[in-house]
Length: 343
Image 1 (cartoon, rainbow, N blue to C red):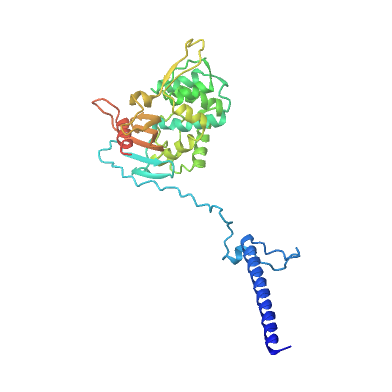
Image 2 (cartoon, rainbow, N blue to C red; image 1 turned 180 degrees about the vertical axis):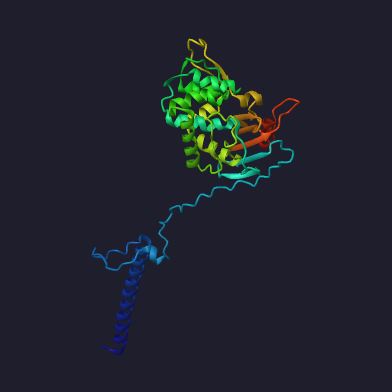
């Protein structure tokens, strides 16, 4: 073979090698791209498992999210805006406003100082009765021994008669709406056998809730030097009590008529003292007062524990020792409107 032919043969072999190498290289690159795209590093071409194989997420820097998968974001609860409540011109000597969504105290005027609760006491009376008498249709007979002592002391009454048999439900409405001491005494006797024993349950419940500056002596709130609380403790109590569906229903009711009895064939028409004094539950800022328990007594002054909803938020306001108003409207109610309308 001539030298020319030899050179041509060598060039043809070299070209075949280059083409073959190019094909192999392209195939290898395609295989690598496929493996990276599928993330399947766990098997070889023969299907056997590789020991110590790595995942696609390790190669890509540790991200475990699949392509196109939405990464969940943390939900952030908005922080309520700061609220400034003025107490200038407030008639009550004691006052505390609590926002329920975060237990933030928005206003505090001597709210942890000792005061007398008067009939705000009946919030605890109703709560203890509800928790110990689950059957609201249970019938209870009211006695003269229960009614006469509170009648003689001039306590407010729901209007039940001695010898009248009524339901636990009717007695609860009698406690919280017209602030009936007769209903308090009947429930205390039914639950514990005596008012004294019932008051022990009230004080036990106060300690359970964390009412550290409260001591009860009566179920009615009639004055006793050792019967005391604070606005803060009453706010705690009401916040706890409204978690009970029965309590909340009764507490937020405007009017109620008891079941007919031989003494009251048409029942007794009961009206919430709070709503009777308010006239309307609507606030100027579009909010609503949902419920309340008033209290009035010489040493305690005029008191009010109330629940309101404004712009979707619920608030508890407790005020104590407002003076009498010789010109008319109750000043505990005026204070509630003044505070709530600032929200």
